[in-house]
Length: 373
Image (cartoon, rainbow, N blue to C red; front, side, top):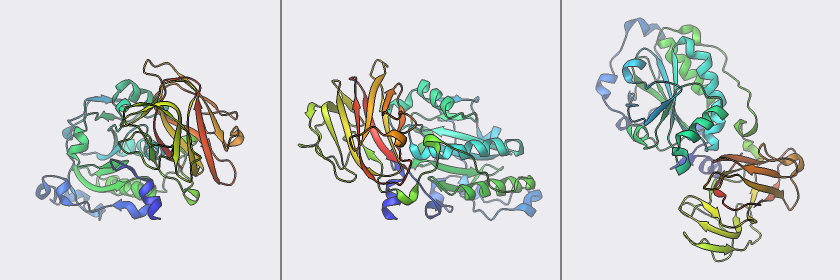
């Protein structure tokens, strides 16, 4: 269980896969400001539907956004009288991606009753700061609620946030009433939304929890068989590297592959490993990982000039067949066309330990991080 919790929270702390054990409702009061004002009883008309949720403080400012997508800028005055869900996410984070079906469903289901969902897109990797890339992700994931672009981490810092994904729930008086960190606990999150809407005079918001359908990388993970955790490729956070002589920081180097043990990985070919990514300098380089999980994903980017990079995936030396991911075919073929997370393996039968290898047929690819599900 400890491995599960540690490996599935994306952190800066990257991302979390929370479940009930990681729900935080009673966040330290130092996180927010104006606590004495926030503790006032509020509108007497709401007393009959008063939630038992604590008051954690006033909703911090969203004024640090460098841009707003799907919406004009929103501020506290515009949000007063609305129940607000603030979702900190970044578009290559698998844990964030898997929350999106639920967040989209809540935004649609409760919009008419006074819920405002705001996605705060705070990047981890450099390519996630590009507004064009964020717009592509919004279209890819069919997001229609407001997105605050937080590329300078100003909103992140205003909230004292430290991970992706994290949900903050604010009531109609602009007070933060709950914080949930990570994947999972969707029923709890929806119950919080319903209770705050009821408190705001919308008692009919109660009902059965939403069960959205999801496929490909947005589908829920297979927790029971998950034995591999997020692994960075850039040297700043890299671990379990198995190629001889180790990673060479910011240097062009010809790597040779050793057969990796479980949760180890290695490089073959001519690569330059930087702080957050490894760049392939010549065609026919590869990356291998020994993993045990239903799904294997790899965050990849195309050439610096934007040209695509072709690749082939092998599982234990063979084409993946029915075990291919949504970004490969049965022969293991795929193309890196944009900087994002690629689902490369989804085991269709019994989940077993395997050696994954991806070979790039063109130079210039950037590799950032493995994630699993």
